[in-house]
Image 1: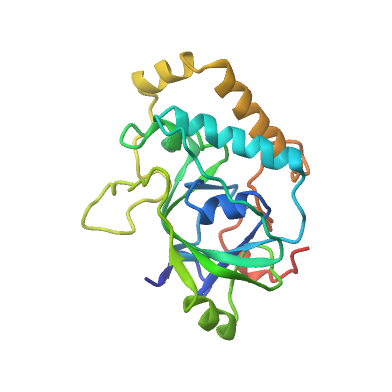
Image 2: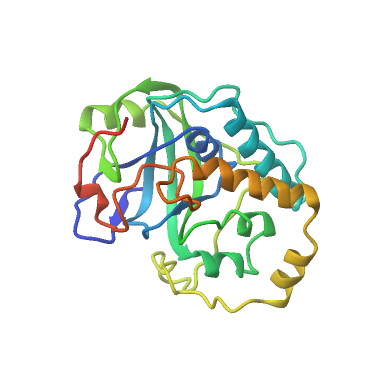
Length: 247
């Protein structure tokens, strides 16, 4: 499946550089939502590249605890996390099927509660069909969404393998006839009675795990607020035009 542009950038084989451990968690199908302060500029396949910063053990623990708790909400207790979190590597890809606001996600009764709990940022990119490279290979990344070099893409497409997520999720389309209908403000986001009840019934462990995940993400923010978990180039869906090297 290719990618459809939503802005004025010609994305051919779009890629996103992310910090670890978020990058591997996404490619392994554990993470279903990629949080951003700007809406997804594409729909379709998005390649995932891990930045060069080696994650602290405390950060890995915080994020694994977070996902352990939110999956437990839906009865999944046997999560298998990656054994390693490689850096400066192309890891695999996901299908971005749409993008909604955080308010829309957390009040979306048609998806599992654990997925709704991933909504921590202004815009939430909805990811399905993870695939990982059998052998991740080294490359440098850029900020924002950018195109993979053709030779890298051609090597990567031959070496990907489908991943079976611990709890497969299919995000329902507002308009079943339009595969691109999942976009910001396409859902009714008024608080539901079930979401209010869920907030009131959160366990202490879940509350602590959410706080830990927010603290882990805040280390990459300049203003101390929970940011997206990757490099950003401002609140602009055309960020891929700014080809700055990721560290």
